[in-house]
Every structure is written in structure tokens, then in C-alpha cells.
Image (cartoon, rainbow, N blue to C red; front, side):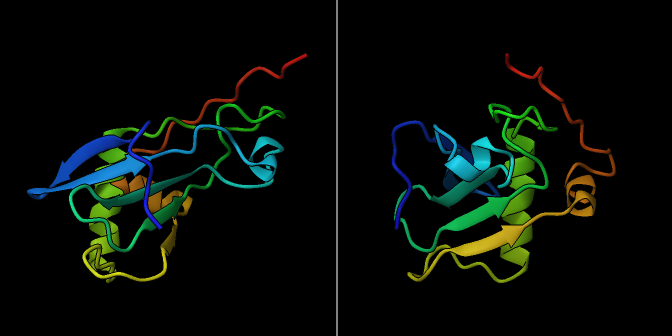
Length: 124
């Protein structure tokens, strides 16, 4: 499994270039705020094992207007470092590794700052 190049962004962490992407359209569960906001990460040059990251919030385009947050490059790079520390090897082929972040993990990734959530207006 690899990430489509269209719509993905490049990020360099500790001298290695990765490609990351948030799904363009939410799944049905994500749109109903039943599923979390997720993004995928892989090596940019030679795709291997994909990292799937789940955040403890909904997507900003969810139908029900649950709390959401923006995924910024600083969060992506901190998450990549965390996954590498926990044994993710992006060079080896294999099934995707799922990393579920909690509120505490987000606070740690953002250098002790609490994550800022946004509650979008409910669409009528």
C-alpha cells in the first residue's frame, strides 16, 4: 500500500524525506464523527511500510460539528519521531502500522502546549 502523490505533502525529519497525506474526502464514519481524523505517512523515495496516525478528534469537515484540529507539519514531524522511537521501520515492506495518539500524546508532541481544538458551526 502506498500513498497517492497527488494531494500529499513532503516533510523532512532528521534528514529523511517523508510524504504525508490526509484523505481528501472523509469516510462515512468520519463524516458522522464516529471515526477520528487520520493521516498517513511513508518514505518519499522508496515507499515501504506506511504509518497510519489516528488523532483524538474529528475531521474539520465532519457533518455533526464535533471538535476538530488542524494537522500542522510540526505535529506530523513529532509523530514520525514518536513512531520511529516505537519501532516503525519505513524501509521494510509490510502491513501498515497504526499509531493512535491520545490527548497526552498530543500535548507531549506539541512541547507541553495543550492542543487547540475548533468546534465548527453546525451546518444547516
